[in-house]
Structures are given as C-alpha cells and as structure tokens.
Image 1 (spheres, rainbow, N blue to C red):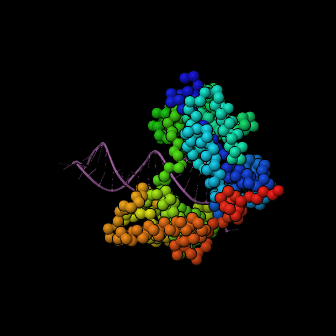
Image 2: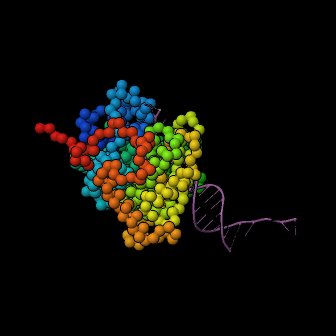
Image 3: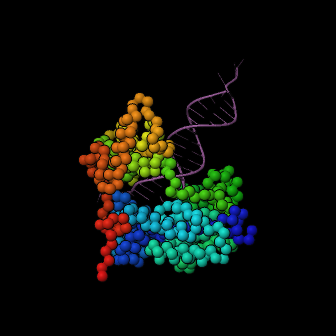
Amino acid sequence: MTGHLSGYKNQVWALVDVKSFYCSCEQLFDPSLVNQPVVVLSNNDGCCVAVSEQAKALGIQRGAPWFKIEREARQLGVQVRSSNYALYADMSRRFIEELHRFSPHVEQYSIDEAFVRLDGFRLDTLEQYGSTIRDAIRDHIGLPVRVGIGATPTLAKLGNQAAKQFECRVEGVIKIDSDVRRQWILERTDIQDIWGIGAKTASRLRTTGIDNALQLANKTPADMRRLWNVGLARTVMELQGIACIEPGDIDETRKQILSSRSFGSGISNFDELKAALAFHCQRAGEKLRKQGSQANVVGVFLRTNRHKNLPQHNRSSAMPLSCPSQDSYKFLDLALLQLKQLYRPGYEYQTIGVILNELTEAKNDSFQLDMFNSSALDEHKRRDLMAITDQVNARFKNGIKPASVIGSTNWHMRQAFRSNRWTTRLDELPIAKC
DNA sequence: TCTGGGGTCCTAGGACCC
DNA sequence: TCTGGGGTCCTAGGACCC
C-alpha cells in the first residue's frame, strides 16, 4: 500500500465541522461578540452546550452548569445566550447546501458537521481542496470550519480532531495521507478522543495499558471483537485505514421519535405531569406526521433529579397501540394510562418524556382500523383534525393544543438570553443602518 | 432556585419452541 | 434413577454521539 488514501476501497472521507457552531452563529449576527468569550446554554438555560475559543481559554467547560459558573463567568466578561434553534437550524441548512457544491456525496451527521466523500481526487490536491471548502463556507455562509481528511470516517474525524489540537499550525485542514503521518497523529491522540470511544470504554482500555490511538490501532480486530465487542473491532479497523463504518444520513426518516424536557423546578403534582405529557404527545405526534410515519408503540418515562440528594424514582414503560396511528390524542390516552402506573406521589420529578416507537410509513387513504373502537368516518375526522392542528400550529405560536396542557406553566422552558431569529422571522431581521 | 434533548446501535438475558 | 440443549425472537438497558 502506497499511502493511506489509496486503501483497497479507494475511499476518501472528509469531515467538515463548524467551530463551536452555536457560538459562531451568535457571533455572525452580533458583531459585538466576535473574538469574545461566548457561551450558549442548553434548554432551560441549564448548562453550557457551546463554548467559544475565548471562553474555553478562560477555563469555561462544555457541560458546565450555568448556575454554578454564572458569577465567575460574568466577572470574566463572558457573554451568554440561550439556545436559538430556529437560527441554528437555518444556518445548518445553508452550511450543508454549500457543501453540496463540492461533492455529490454529502452525509449530514449532526447539526454542525457532515461527511463529504472525495473519492477520485488526486492525493496531492486534497489539502488544497479542503482549504477551498473552508474558505467557501467562511466567505459564503459566514461560519468558520475545520476539515479532516482520511481513508475512513474514523480517520477523517481524527484528522478533524487533530486540526483542533494543532490549530495554530494547520489553519483548520488536516489530511492523513501517509502511514508516517497516520502514526504520528494516532500516537498523539488520547484514547477518548477517538470517535466511538466514550468515558466508560476509555477508562477500561486504560487498565489494559492502552492510552492512545496508536496503541489501539496496533491490536488485531479479531482479538478486540472477542475480548470487547464488535464496535471496538470496527474502530480498530478504521484506525488501520480499512473503512467499515457508513455514517448514516440524518435526513433519513427517524426510527424513533422522542419529546421530552426537564422542568424549571421539580414537580410532584400529578396534574402538572399530565399537562407536560399532553404537550409532549402533541409535539411527538407533530414530528411523526411531518415525516409521514405512524407509530405502533407509545412509551413514557419519568425521572427525578439525580443531582439532588432526594429520593430517586426513575421509571419507564411502553405499550402497543391497538392499531398503527398518527393521532396525538390516541398517544395521550395510552401515555396517560402508563403515567398513572408509573407515578408515585411524594417524589420531585424533573423530567418527563414520550417516545413513539416501531414507526412505519403512513399510507394516505388506506389505514388499518381499530376493530373495536372506531369507524372509518371517525378515523378520517381524526386525521383531518391532526392535519389542521399542524397547519395552524405551524403558522401561529401557541395555536391549538390539548386542553390538559392549558393552565399549567411550571414545566415551561426558561430562555432568558435568547437572540433574535435573524434569518427566519420577518419581524426579527437584522437592520442595516446607513 | 437553577445540571439538555434528541438520536443510534449493540448486547445480555428471558421467553419460547422443538 | 433419570429432569437437555440449542436456536430464535424480543426487550430493556447501556454506551455512545452531538
């Protein structure tokens, strides 16, 4: 084998990701944030989900609970924003659209990163091509990206990771194209920075003397399969340059749909839980109908706050529908039944959620009838009701919702620092002053 | 007062069958 | 006295990702 980009499958993978995506989106529309320490918070303004380079340099860590670091962060001059998903989703769409100019094969992997296949390019031009992509995203979309290039998805991720690690030396683009360079980078990559290896596996690997990616890559896949699991065996192969993981496209239809949210503060009252449950059934149903699926199983979970020194109660259940459905109200009936079984008075619950499972494609005019409970006419009416509800809710915030949702506000989301939805709302467009 | 929400895949173990 | 074992299917939970 001459180089790592001419392995037997002749694949070339690039992983393009946006530097602290949420922060970069905020900085793009608010120039006062440029080159400043910025953090973006999770739902409920709970913890830091994105941290700008400057904030990182001040010691702010991704995942840190905001209420714990707020005082110090403010003193350090850190700027804070609540999550603004409308903005991020739209910027993500533009980012992916731009990538399609560079390859017919783009697989969006998350809101801020995508795999781009560059098979067939001349090896000595790849680095230049990576820089071209980086410049285009910066100039046309306004977002800073890093590019990692390698013979497998895992090596591309690793290159991307290395581009982060050696930022000052490589200007955001790293290509792993020779065995020498592969080994050099692997040796300097901590085991836990490998895609697919998390905290648990990393600490177990360390007890066997494997601390960096090179040590792992030198194992045989068969041994790792036998001693560990198939996932780790695949990772070893990928690190050796043999592609065996196909990153899925996140635009594919979901196999499971979940709606959940933690409450602003603990909830013990059954009726308030019920209100939240109704909200999540409505929202999960909305997502389900949007992708044209129907569900066969409805699940519910209920959790107390594991960070609190209080009695804990975490339970979940799932029940099959009598026939496949898209009907939020049917989901609610079944979910409520389960909530009654799961609920115990006296606990402070923190999160509730609804999961729709065993999704199948919804056919337009033929659907299975529930033998005991409904007529075809009812089914049609229910479908129309759902369709109209979705249309109204798409146009008007706080449009139609189940009656049981109304009147309880304790579980609503906190978003104290949200910026404008600059690109998706007419009344929030940025204004240019002459 | 205040620690996210949404996914995927894999595995172990129970149920069941012959 | 002697009381199997192997295959398949299903599910809950774990680990991981961003």
